Length: 306
Ligand SMILES: NC(=O)c1ccc[n+]([C@@H]2O[C@H](COP(=O)([O-])OP(=O)(O)OC[C@H]3O[C@@H](n4cnc5c(N)ncnc54)[C@H](O)[C@@H]3O)[C@@H](O)[C@H]2O)c1
Image (tube, rainbow, N blue to C red; front, side, top):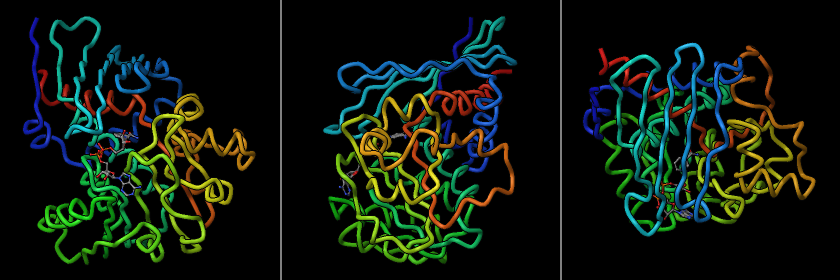
């Protein structure tokens, strides 16, 4: 048996954001086609330890990810991804922190490509933590950014992120803002990547046409978006069972009667219906599902296991 172990450097040197987006898009399409067995993840100690798995029928390959989440630690998310295929003696073990940021970014890239206006180029990013750089890279891969405005509860993090991304974003106007409300006022795309427990801005702060991605809340007690925004938008989610069990904003909005379950569209299903008109306000809410990790692990297996 051979085990190949991949750390951040090998993964970053091997997988581009564009490849990650394409792999995650194919993963969501296969999920909609019933190609995956994917239980809702196990959350232990109120979400501080997560176990996720997915089995892809036609390649007989499986991914298991274990995560530890601690917001008092940097990085907050650590863990391991294991990929294996029936009949193969070798398998792959990868750093879950980097796979997670890459696949969370890639899902946002897929959704933004589907839902944002074709000429959208002004991005407001709320939350400048570990997930933030890949959120920006993913949006930039599908919509050429003209302007990026970053906000964080800790302004030093917002400034540090802008400095770190400068070499990757030549020609893009890079700004920081004092608060989320002013940052989103002229945005064409918004990314929320915080561990907040209440909405980051009121719906009234947003322009008439905008696409909002929200990746942060992954427990019923967490929320980044107001009910009113969900009520007035086309809402696309990663997977219905996961959203109803884990997404604080979806649970809150359904319980408050602001949206119904029937109004929620899964990303995979949306991808299989091309040329749909989604309206002026769109939201992609993702808690993160195992098919995304499988997609990145499968990509890595194709490159490293011969
Ligand atoms: N959906 C997914 O696939 C996915 C994947 C990974 C992480 N996450 C979640 O995304 C969130 C961010 O993860 P991370 O690894 O970047 O965490 P992190 O701790 O590195 O960063 C979080 C950042 O959000 C900022 N923040 C918190 N509340 C804020 C507020 N009200 N306004 C502005 N900034 C605020 C913090 O100051 C911090 O800089 C977490 O909740 C994490 O669980 C989701």
